[in-house]
Length: 385
Image (cartoon, rainbow, N blue to C red; front, side, top):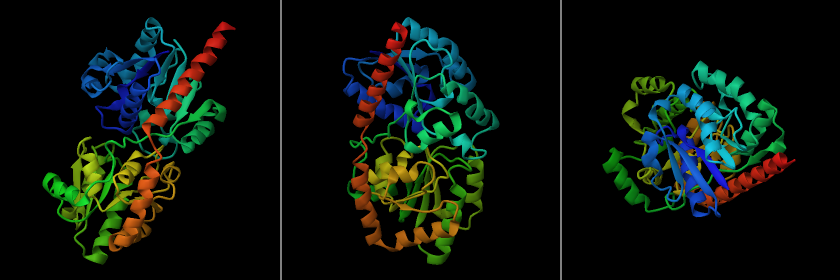
């Protein structure tokens, strides 16, 4: 088959969708089964795809990077390219870029329907597009992949798409990058790289308010510090996003501002070591369609305290401690329990390592290939009739 994949929503490699695409494409490349892949890549993103040997890269001019122009490119230019390349399937891995024209069978990945769950998650234009326009576009797709059962239920609930048209395929993990290693050496590295000299709680997510719930975690951490007088720190890794200024202001106003660190976007090389250096990974998000960071932390041997919201309880299973992300007192209490009990951290660490091993990109790619094949065959029979 000739399979096209849009990649324009990776936002310079700094989003969860970027990690999804990189993991999926690497696994597809290693087990293509004779398929030909055509990747549509914005010009300045080309270096991110140097790994895609054997896949054909179609460069997209940079003038189409902005959201509005990128949507226009998807609706006008991409269909013509799909026809000229005689694609058997076109895969768009983000609901924000779903096609209305049907130059060939269409497959979409929907990671979450956050606009239906978190008020003010995005600016009003994105919220309106996510709630109204995507509803209609989703019905034009021949196959839809949901990254969790929770997202699949949302697609049926909010878009009215029958469950049988949605394939649930969990994300994978790159176990060649995320694996346990000497935590002592990782802490020495963190002290040198980020000047982190005390034990720390780590939260890895873009600095987004209110959806990622940083403010309640800051409040819980402040209560933890007052009660314990401990040297523990709170570390935020991630790029500034919608509402980041609110988070930075809360940190500046905190009496423990010197113990709350923002280290910015953490690159691929540094990320596993930062997980290994952390004593506890905390993920109090108000909503996630999947939630890769808790699994990555588990795979690196870091115990996880997570919100159960959205898909998170489904994804972390019984391998993490769960806490209501809106209950600041409870969040503080769990921080306290984990900080004071090394045996509890070891217990959760062991459970996390076993659980994370179940997630692989090879399985994700195999199941995705099955969707491509099924949709192409179904639409081929439809055209023949």
